[in-house]
Image 1 (spheres, helix red, strand yellow):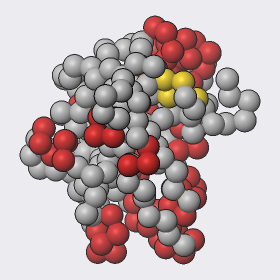
Image 2: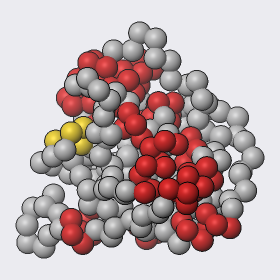
Image 3: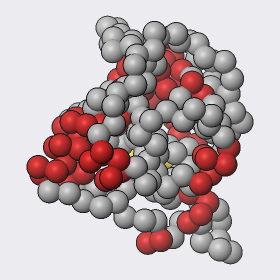
Length: 227
């Protein structure tokens, strides 16, 4: 298994009119604000990326499907096998992709009522970077997307499409069909640096056809009959 930290990408490809920032509730700040950015950083830095405790949530309403959020907050399971920064949990003296998973901090769990309230609040957080109908599923070919993901575009170097199959430097994607909104997958894959200028996921300058295929494949994962 290999882990690759690619070079940074560059210029945005998708222009979506920005929306006003949602007001972050005091309750959400109290529960999540110590580990996650709930508002878009005014001046993001490399140091912020290396020091954050959890992934940014200021675009959670663009990213997640609410039913998944409600369930996950009650029974959290690892999304990033090595935590936010995998190398912090690499076992000394062993290959860099050998992780001490026991050292990865556990996410707290919540009761149903609290999880539902938190999910409602998170779904109000929008970036203005994702048009809801950006992904057009008509004619999308998930099998061609699988070929692009696993062989042609190198996504599998950083992401797992099935447990134990793929890299560890990015979040696993084998439940992406339940977790992620298709238009978010399309927009983020198209230009990750639009969301964070220093994030290490590369902008690959993919065609719309490639983006559609990859999005169709990724958002099929975890669904019944997915290959």
